[in-house]
Image 1 (cartoon, rainbow, N blue to C red):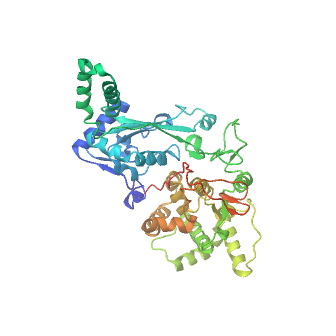
Image 2: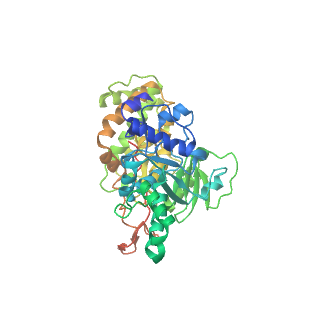
Image 3: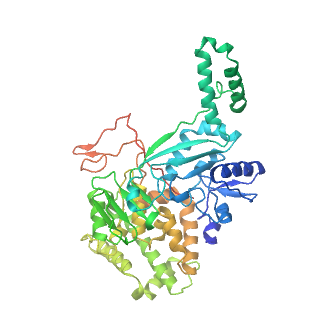
Length: 460
């Protein structure tokens, strides 16, 4: 894994904690939340304040995320908002934290000058015992305060000031005045510098969770569904219309198409679909060559052609299916669209431009694991897991390719592969003609509309 760390492909963009004062603040916050402290003098933290170094030290990578839900956080600086979220149990957690930090940035900046801010993503469940519990995971409330309780003290002082101003006899209430003076010593001048962090609720619609080997929950679509990444050991009765696994290719494809969630890459406007498919073929060839202990150092286009000829018979069905489609397009331009039985089917798809675009591309990445680039961009945890099973040659090639071809222009690469980002100010509506489309064209947007969209969760 050190290759990935070296190239900034893992643990990239974390916030460094190295000054004694910051380490001390973190320890006070950590003890406040967990009763534990760290002996490390410097470390790095993600957007939630989780440190992989401290996780190793404590032997607990979930020390801020007990039971995999109700994630706790430690905020030392507003600069943490651009960091990734490591060991995420739910795909929406980072975007919720990021939005909360952005919407309260001024207050959080003032508070973190004095002390660390600690908080929790609170929901209605405190542990996930069965897949049925996941369906109850809908409303997330963010609660936060400093370790010293500055926000709570500020609210108490505000109430006492209001009492003092409204009661004509308060001038003679020595106890009330003494309480205000003591609270003001702790909070400062809240008239000139108000301290307030309101609890905020976020609705969780469609999301992915790492529980039970991976679950995709779709509730805000025409036909609700739960898609398990791995085959379930028991039959689960869930309050959705469809329950399936990713191995159920026909059912998964039908669900995605009926709900208008995917589109063929070949039909996407402004996309060089053939070039994208040829790159996917290259990745598959690299996988086969690496499994045959081929030296992949400084592989050129000419080398790739030689590898294709050398291992033609060993290449998997996905390669031959995609290659056959490209040959048909080059020779006759006419293509009989493949069914989900065709190994190339999901390699030919990408998400449509809707509010759950990142979630759907994440699902497609898991269905097309030989495309390591999409897997890294859309589903890093799955990428890291598979990476550990690869040969040394493939690890080296993949790390070098991602560093040279993706990290230098992440935004441009994502737009080339997946199209432009969805309009974050436009509410997603679907009346059977496609998202935000009616029978006579695009649906006009009400300027007062607002929705809770997920931000791009690229970690690096």
